[in-house]
Length: 425
Image (cartoon, rainbow, N blue to C red; front, top):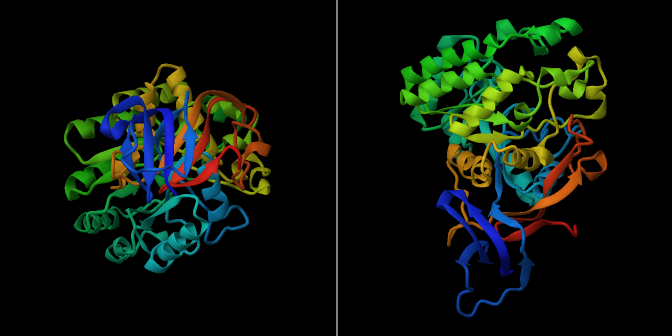
């Protein structure tokens, strides 16, 4: 179907565009901006007057729970939630069951996402077989199967020699390594930031140095091996400053932050609110403000959801025993837009953190130039709405943001020129 998106404010950070114009789509690609090409007759027109039109959002971390934990969520349910949220590309970590350490698992995820048809799913392959930190995975085969990077997810590789060899192998394949920096000895048994709140509540703590010490090790290995490295879900001001220094020194490193880390702190745990049990933990207000500053100056270039849907029972246990994570796809865009309202980012910078920058990290394109794939997000920046369980499309309803009022809501999502969500669905 040929589609025309009319009168919207097009913001395309990859091409430096910010203007009110029309977009014309045919055969899944953008064929014209402004006036329609000769002979073009739209089968459907979308009135985007007063709305923002931007490339489809790219989320660098989303656990889809399939294969292995379909009782929590499925690829169909979570990609549908992504489409509702304006997200057209999801990057899936390798900690599925079975682990994504073979091409067969990667192919399974890709085929099921294509069958669902709501969003594009890109896989990260495992750094080590079964994520056990001992034997390297076959990264060459994983790259051939379509993996855009490799990671050991939240399972730390304790042996530094194994990590060095893994980075060397990844560098030889030109695969970026996605790192979750946390020293397992310092974090062992912890569930909250080590500080006044954890002491008051009697919760085992994870000190900030658990992250910064791990970052220091990985940065030295990056310098030694020359691998491209991406630090995932930073939680502390000190780690962000270390990444900034490494970037200044010319190391090929990037970083992202989960949206909830830019708004919540250890104080939000309150009296054992398990919805605020996340990994890495919510830290101090100083850390939160430091992460915002790092985002503003570009040290942290992408905002991700760190989507981890859970069944209801997973959050009903006592705080230390509850499962960490937030069902976060549907709050990614509205939380990022709140940074614009708080004058942390401009609207163009905010959209870049959700489109161009994360796409660049995984080696894909997020652009609406002529000839590009028509992955499009259209949202009303002035619409207020309340986030409730009834409004959620994700199978997981675990979120500390339930009851919040947000500003900015997606009205249409297009994947390769096909409308996969609109407000009439």
